[in-house]
Length: 332
Image (cartoon, rainbow, N blue to C red):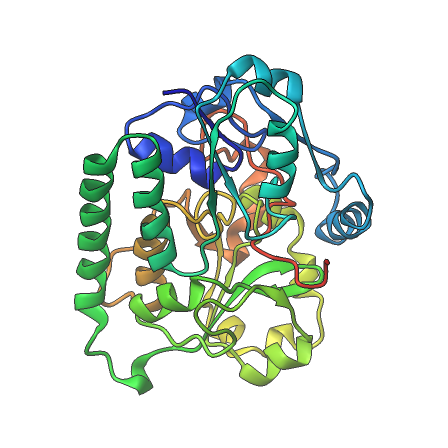
């Protein structure tokens, strides 16, 4: 079966089901073999600037008729796909289903279009099985789901009896200029990992927040995981947070519980590696119960300056575009 995926989480899901897409998005970089497949998408955003500059470009481009992304219709036609896996969650995250439907109308093939729209871990697991049915991997999808659920339960069973007063208040930043708090599945992951996430409910979209709202919550743990940023790029934008009034007064800062997490590869990709994210969050929130996360997933925020340009968790020099933020509610 010839499968095309138009976002990184879909590529990871298809790979977990034992298939290799014949075409992917320009952002797909995991598993590493995905980077060698033809890209059927491209971005109109220059992601080399600061987080504020990227945000400005996203808002300006999203307001145009052209949109943020482009489809290479010629390449798509040549691939003759049987199935295309795309998304309907956010037209800033990745190419959305309307753009794909327009492109399909212009090619000879008549592929089935599978659209994902996850806002919780349950949605992600449901999408895994839906994709499995579409590509003829139903049995494998059930096996993968059982394994993921087993890993989730292994974490939850160790945190379920933690008293409320022993659960630290957590803030996870999905973007830093403007400040956005991670939504969707984040509240579930934090709860299962043994923390308290009062800034967003399960399924709530990531959106810009007033800095005073963050200060009022006074998080005891802060995790900086901008969507599309690896650890190096987070380090390059540290001042977005560290130069804000009251940053040094936050309990998390004063007690040395501020972490940077590779938001590009983990928290912001609604695929199988959300469970890896849970397993990385648990030791940050409950270090007495879990061993520390791998250094390529999360590092102390204060250590980011030491990473330098040599940091490359994927060992292939690629990273997803910064505009693949989980949601930008300020954009139409």
